[in-house]
Image (tube, rainbow, N blue to C red):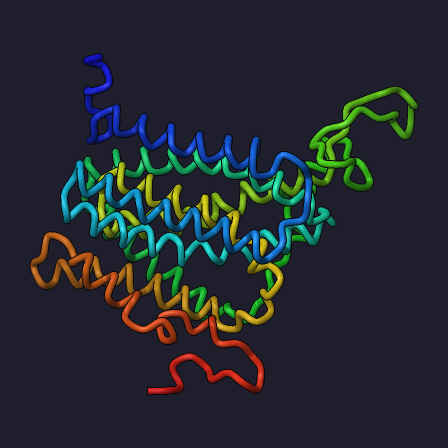
Length: 328
């Protein structure tokens, strides 16, 4: 029993086990009960699942408050909101990948389910490594902050550019190294089929597997932005990791609702670029003012004070809606 009270990355091991058990239970419930069969998830079901995951993510703040106090809770909630906002950009790339590989909507949930398992593992590695480095070299926070500012400015000036994956080097590499079927084979990632040249039965990858690999790569790229962003809020690995994973869990559910109206999110890139610049700048502001940390409450206030101004990308391009920020 003493083992579970040992410290692991700054917190008792039992706290990590509680979180991991909760996540595994949610995934098992998702795959084994709520979505046992392949079906296309509609907007209503997507919104209900997303609301459930958001509620669980916010509810977990109660556990953080119980064990870690008010300051840690404020940091967790701020990190959760920031990570949730930044992760929305993943939806555009996921939709592009599914479209490129012609993955039927009824099989997309399965790809995203297995994708989240990879995300849990990869982000754990990145956060564990990042926490270790920051603990040893505090000046890395300034490197993270500068990187976020540069990324935000770069995103601002490239917001109108379309994502392009046709010439992606990883796709070319996989197609050269793997036999790939000419289309999906149900929800399978691999199938055994006759080789077109020899006629022998050999293992083939399906487009679903290629889509899964590309989604994992895309999340790894996005994590390069989002993980440093959360480290500028708190360096506690437990808060960083739990807020990251709860935000990503809900993203998978929200995808099916937002993917149907992606074209109407006119200003997403601009909003996210401003958010990245703000998060990066606050590290230098805190240092200039002699603060140990930029107050989490101010970050949350900046992000939550006005829904219209907070998310200018929610303005839709039609004749009945005002552009965000144009009123008041």
